Amino acid sequence: MAPTKGEGPAIGIDLGTTYSCVGVWQHDRVEIIANDQGNRTTPSYVAFTDSERLIGDAAKNQVAMNPINTVFDAKRLIGRRFADAPVQSDIKMWPYKVIPGPADKPMIVVQYKGEDKQFSAEEISSMVLIKMREIAEAYLGVTIKNAVVTVPAYFNDSQRQATKDAGVIAGLNVMRIINEPTAAAIAYGLDKKATSVGEKNVLIFDLGGGTFDVSLLTIEEGIFEVKATAGDTHLGGEDFDNRMVNHFVQEFKRKHKKDISGNPRSLRRLRTSCERAKMVQDAEKYKSEDEEHKKKVDAKNSLENYAYNMRNTIQDEKIASKLPADDKKKIEDAVDAAIQWLDANQLGEVDEFEDKMKELEGLCNPIIAKMYQGAGADMPGGMDEDAPAASGGAGPKIEEVD
Image (cartoon, rainbow, N blue to C red; front, side):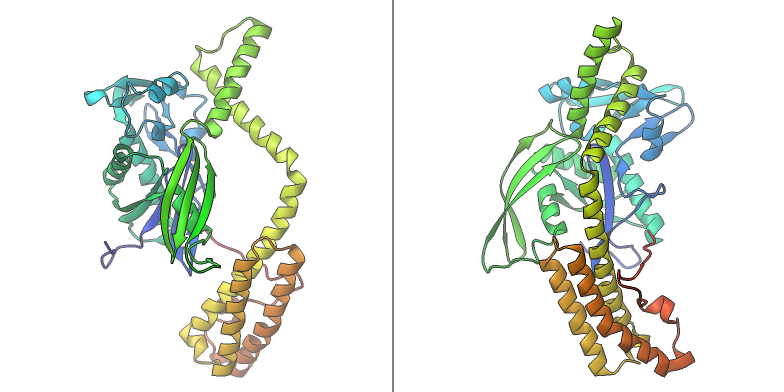
C-alpha cells in the first residue's frame, strides 16, 4: 500500500529487545534518525510513575529509583503464553510483576498514577513504536502513518501478528513485517552488490540484546529468501548481564553474608553496573583497534558524503542549468565511479579513501568554482549552501544535522 497524498514517507523501525531505532529513505540512502537525546538508538523501556509515563532514555535513566514500574524486554513476552517455559524463566529475572491474563496471555502489572494497571506486551511495544514514530516526525516535520517493522526470523505467526497488533495500537499502518536478517542484508546493500550472476548464498550472524540468530539467505536478482534459520532466543546482551548479575549476587552473599536477590532496587543498581563494566571492558580491550577503525570510517564517510552531496548539487535545477553538459557529464561519471569504488572497497585503508577523495575533488571543485565565477552574483544560494566546499588533504568537513 503506497502512502496517500499528504502523508509523510514510510519509516523503518527496528523494534529490538533492549534498544530500538528508526530510519527513513532520504537522498538515495537510509538516514538513521537520532532521538531528542542525540542517540540513534532508543532504549525499549517504558516507565510508569505517580504523575507520568516515560519512554526511552527518560525511562531507563530512572530505572534504579523505580525498578518495579519500569518495563523492558517486552519483546520476550510478545505473542507468547504465560505458561511457556521461556516466559517462566524470564519472570524470575524481572523486577516488575507478570501475571496470567485472559487466554493465558502474560499481563504486566505496574502502578500508574496511584492505581494498579495491567498492560499486555503488545501495548508496551506500541508505546515504544509511538516514541519511534514521534522521533521520525520531529526530524521530518510531517505526520507519519506507514511503517515497516522488523522481527527475528524465528518469530512464529502468533508473534508476528502480535507485533502487527502493537503497530495498530500505536496508530501505524504496518505495511510489512520484515525478517531482521533480511533487513541486515538490505542494509549492507547485498541486493545491489551481487558480483556473480545467479543465486548467491549469504550467512548472517545477528547477536542482539535479547537474541542470537544465524540465518542462511539466498539472494537472486534482488529477491531475498530465508532458507534456514537457527538461534537462541535467550542469548544476547541481556543474558550476558543476567549471568554477571547472578555471579555477583553469589559473590556478595559469600563476602558480606547478605542476599540482595529479593531487593529490586539493589538488583537494578547491580545490573546497571554490570552493563557498564561489560561495555568498558570491551572498550578498553579494543580501544586502539576502534581508533584505527574510526579513522577509516571517517575517511569513508567523508568521501561518501562528498560524492552524494555533489550528486545532489548537480541534480539541482538552478545549478544544472548553469553547468555545461560536458562538465555535468564529467561530474556524474566521476561520482558514479567513486560510489561504485566505495561499494567494492568498504574495507579500504585510510590513505585509499583520502586518495580517492583528492581525485574526486580535483575533478569536481574546479568545474563548480568555474561555474560560480561565470554566474557571479546571479547564482542563488551561494557555494556554501548548494555545493560541497573544497578543502585540505583530509577531505571536507561536512556537518550532518540529525
